Image (cartoon, rainbow, N blue to C red; front, top):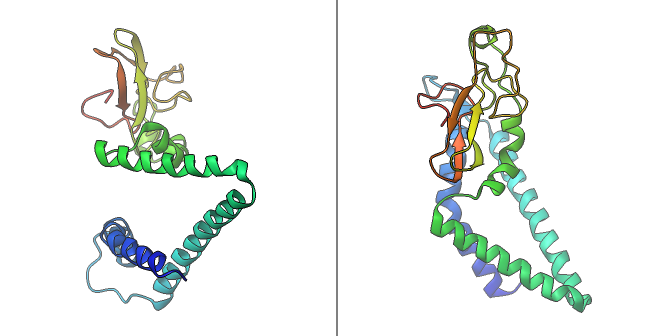
Length: 199
C-alpha cells in the first residue's frame, strides 16, 4: 500500500474521531443504559464488535465503489472528465458546508425525508380530534414567496405537510393563515407543538 495514502487515511481517521464521538456517543449511551437509567451498565462485548464490523463493512463498500469508479475512469478515457467533476463537486460541497455551517435543504431531505413523511406513533394525547397529531420529528424546509398567503396545517393529518389539505374537517382545529415577509427558505414546524407557529 502506498505510504502517502496510508498516512492520509490515518490522519483523516484521527481528525474524524471527535465527530464520531459526538455523533455516536450519546446514541450508544442511550442504547446501553437507557434514558435516565441509574448505575453503571455492563457493556456487552458483542455491541462493540458489531459496531467495529459495521464501520469496517461500510468503509470497505465505500472504498470498493470509489476504486471501481477510478478503474473505469482509467480504462475508459471518456469517464475521466466525469471523475474529475465528481471530485470537484465533492470539494465544492465540502467548502460550502464549511462556509455556511449547515446542509442545503436538498441534501438534508435525502436523509430525513422518510422520517418527516412518517408520522409519530399515535398516543391518547394526540388521537383526540381536538388535539394536533405530530406529523414529524423535524421541521420541514420550504421555499416561501414574499407576500403570498399560506395555510399551515395545525392538525397534523394533512398529506401535504406542512400545509393544509382539509384533513382537519370534523375537528375543532383550523389551519393557520400566514404570509412570508420576505422570499426565501424557511423551516416550518412538523411536530405541531411549536410556541411560534408556523416556525
